[in-house]
Image (cartoon, rainbow, N blue to C red; front, side, top):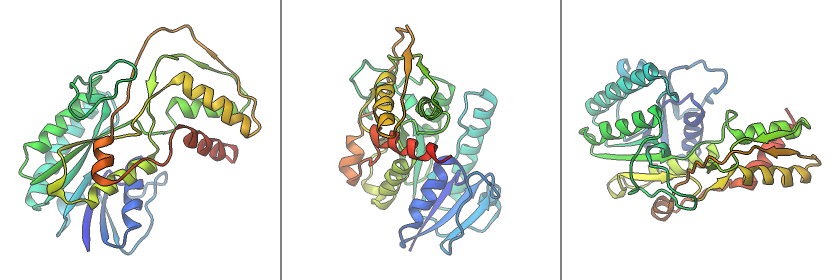
Length: 291
């Protein structure tokens, strides 16, 4: 029986990672969360799950942890919050070194990469040019783990997760309400990843032998779509559900591209995303029409 410790376990991604691990009877899970009584992302009661408050990581007796999946980090561009997150990462590494943890899977961001032209996807060897403070802090956290004494470190650069704060949620919410929406940046390219696919990708990495992993993997859908592509799909799929979807397009020529080549992870672990653009849109329509 292998023991995996998940930090940030009550967060949006962390909760899904914990649930994915518990599906496999070969894992015990120690979940570390800042909000153990979280009502938004409650963790299930399970005989193979132990939940500790964040402070418990440094105070409780924790033994035999083989792998850590680090999902804990402030999702913000606020410098003060990022400094706190960075300080926590440093403290976390010191604790994992004391516990003699064998391997860490550390969550980073696709934002560490320099933006490339449309159609070009960032590989793990693409130029580094963080797009904002959050991405810079994530890249710095990668470096902290790599210079630690932890034997096997894998940094996973994650695509943008589909969350209620994302543009696609807004598009479909407007469509369900019968309201017109505006695509303000039609030339922006994005590649949204469903949280269940993110969790299954991390699980696939955790299943592998640590000594056979690369130090860096991209985790995403392996392609990119413009916001106009997303809007057109919302119109088409909304029609399948009986909605008349209307939107207009702003006269905005700014071009922003994001997308990663994820073939290395797919090849090494036999993983691939199950919920692509159209499946994601259908899933959201089903969810919102019942809300």
